[in-house]
Length: 157
Image 1 (cartoon, one colour):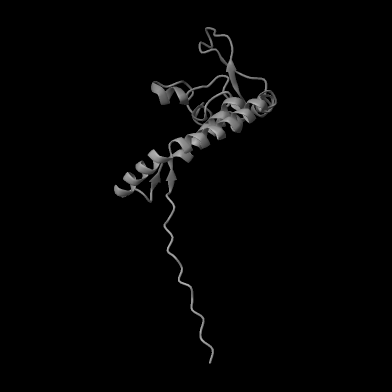
Image 2 (cartoon, one colour):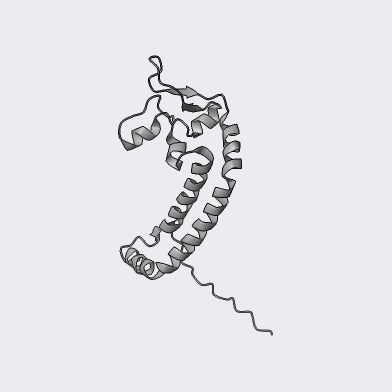
């Protein structure tokens, strides 16, 4: 009788960490590069802008007010865009509705800034690779401390 085949025992694999801080930072920098060149503002301004009719107080409150010359998500969804005009007695803020649609403005900005986006993306990728090589040893030490603290399966540098 032929011998039965032995099943290979599978190795238990450690779960990958849920959040890698360096990858989140790299993603946010890439998003900021695109939103600055296409929409005229950083990612928070594009996401949170125009949620309130008037600018609030504080750092986050000011982000949620009208953002002239920054195309926001709300403006893309509604199809109207704010821009700076002249302040008057009836309109003290000077913010008026633009004649152009947000999509047309994004297309114009893309044509004007495609070189900045490409060069910025290449430089950013090269910069992150160099940064990761230079900080590899210190990141290993920090990740070891994070694992000892019991957070190794949740977060990693």
